[in-house]
Length: 111
Length: 112
Image (tube, rainbow over all chains, first blue to last red; front, top):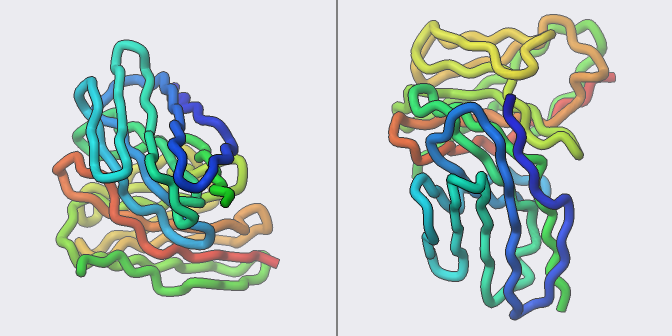
């Protein structure tokens, strides 16, 4: 089966750094995705990791360790607009691109 | 700007009604997906399609069917709506590049 775990809620301070963890156990692995979802809106793509290591994109970075079944999303210089849910998703089979999602982490940024 | 368009943002239907949710993408993507999103449960896959007239069951297909007669359009059908199908429904599409999905804006369906 597929199992993806991430914390339900996190709180962080404006200007600070926050790390959102995701662990997964899936039958097959062809990449891990992070999406951002503001309340009432559709998820939007943040990052994609298929090889071990860190991918940096502006204020956001994503890390993957395939041997540990572990990823994290790192958000730096937090802004109020970063308050959102962050979804971790795993692609098990490249052929059909089906994604299995975690339940999401609701991040609240406080002044 | 590439788009996935869902026909309705909000819908209210009665128990037992047949409900059609429409999704259209303009990116010539092969794959299309229907998910529902519920608090505490995350996104769960209902059905997906990787080609015209092809469909595959996802994790929770019971009570739903789909239609893909044209590449750009993927419809979700609730044969006889029930209150436990009240949810946010999200359509997505992707190409065979491993770059993930583009989502539609979602349809919030309430069955009363």
